[in-house]
Image 1 (cartoon, rainbow, N blue to C red):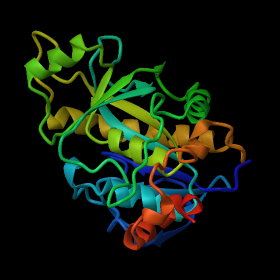
Image 2: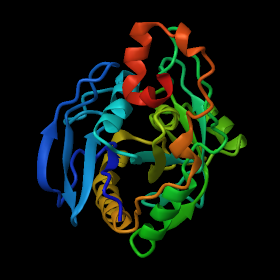
Image 3: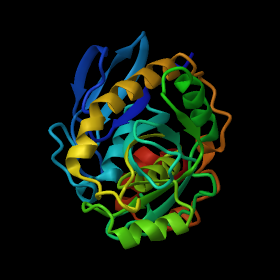
Length: 287
């Protein structure tokens, strides 16, 4: 059993974790600014958990306005070594139906306006990212979803678009031609930053709609998406609760040592300000 808290990012429709015992708010000040909201810590079935509403409680932040660096850094500062991202997505394939659960194993970052690294300012690092999702954590989620998810699809490519608008039909058809499975607006930055922070990351992609590629159908509407959020949120929380029982302390995956050989800058040349900013993320590699 893992004694480290599991980090959970709640997406659209999921702003709290049901059944969380001893819940309390933790306001974390990070070197990268303010997270989306206060973190909620507690236990679920006796296992520690740290929860954050990605868009803030009340859904106040656009995808582009989210301070992804502060969010991931906050999880790191609170001791989380694994993060499960619960995310509403659109389906780009006929067989991925609304209310299905997808466990993506690849991302395409189609955003244009978001910081996606903790580094810079005199410190350069290049982490391996060929496998952007932790295979061990994804395996735990796959096992936990058996018998809970109506239909589970293990693997797939998630395209992260800028938003906040949904796709045009031409864009939607282009993404299908690329072989995309699901589309969303938030997970690429989380995955990149989690890898730099040596945190295991996996996505529970909860399908709400078919985007707008299907001929002869009306384009996706907000009403259609919102109508499915509550059911998806309940399924996601059940999967997370079951996943907690399967987590062990050891992390044999490469995520745990992602920065070991990634920082190229001569340590003596890293500016003091940059060194202090990076300390919560990479402190053990800077001294």
